[in-house]
Image (spheres, rainbow, N blue to C red):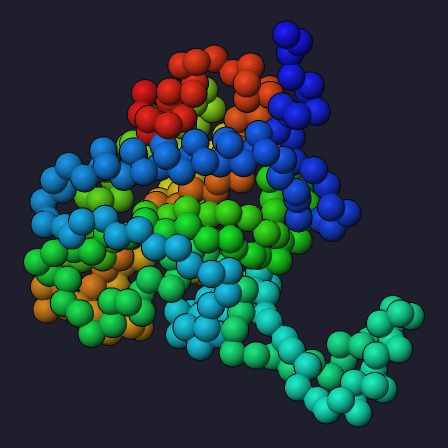
Length: 307
């Protein structure tokens, strides 16, 4: 029996002609599925006591769009307008469309009369969760979520791994400052160990978000000074090192905005984010384009979430 054709076992993403948007063949999808299993195992490993009682993990799948009002309330539109993708639609009459329709064939501005809708493209998987906590007190049982979504960011570059449409998995919790800090630290340790077991040689670095506007340097400096964000960075291509995962403390930002409490004060939140497509690309760069040729111990590490 001959070996399967490389064309059917190669997991390399396929181009679409649009920067930052890829097609993914079956073997690549299999890698993504294994990563999901590994993240689930990591979440189970992290369930060790961190000093605060917690609810059972709630798995949530969310659509690739979200209420524009939610994103505005959360502060994303104000802080990252350069990354946000809005959803527009035609609200005119059939007569008005008859005037515009010929422009489709000629490449004209057939979209000139479209108006913004009540939806935007989802920029991060965790945002729909915070409204679920509105009005709750999370002191006695800190909620824990596992969420995955197809996300969009209007990235300005198309270097390997810097996609505009990508899959993100997140683990999220809410509670007291002590709970969220311990939860963050525990997940950071496990994420570093898992990526190391995958042969990716991660470095952990204090980081900041790409705020926009005149105050961005102040926000970034404050974020770094308080060590609110750590990124795990690995090679994705020759000479290209990117963050494939991060852990974040939001302090009481979402508790204030969405009105949930812990210990008599606005609740704190923390999240651990996994860029599934970036991790997959890092694996292909490190171990080769055919997952069927990868070592057996790597497959075990992929799905076990630990070394």
